[in-house]
Length: 154
Image 1 (tube, rainbow, N blue to C red):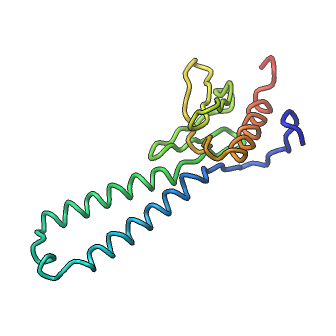
Image 2: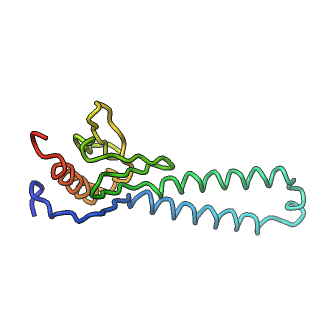
Image 3: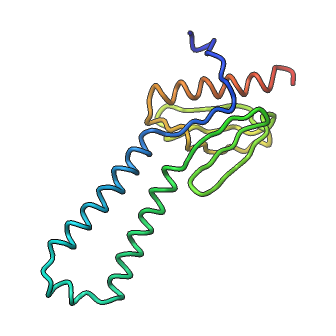
């Protein structure tokens, strides 16, 4: 298989970033473990001085952190026969194949950028540059789908 002649991609196909999922799961697990150990390690008289407001603030910050980690973990790019769905955090964008002109992953870029037919560009965080060879393969596959759906002279 050469980069110019990728293996055909069967649809539907979903790409998810590996690095952010590992970081999110490990970070979330570590946060729970550290906070639990710290709370257990406190003396009872110190625990009694913690007010409900302080507990609420800590719990709120904890939930906010998890909401950010979850947004990072849920990012994905889904190719279907009728188009492409891009989920970046909590935002979802649906594109028809004809709307996508090009797929780019510039050197040093954090994620893929889709060039759209209206002259705009859109991030696709489901394919992360930090995933290295895995990201390059995903870009080749996605480009082949865009090329297949938008033949020259279309």
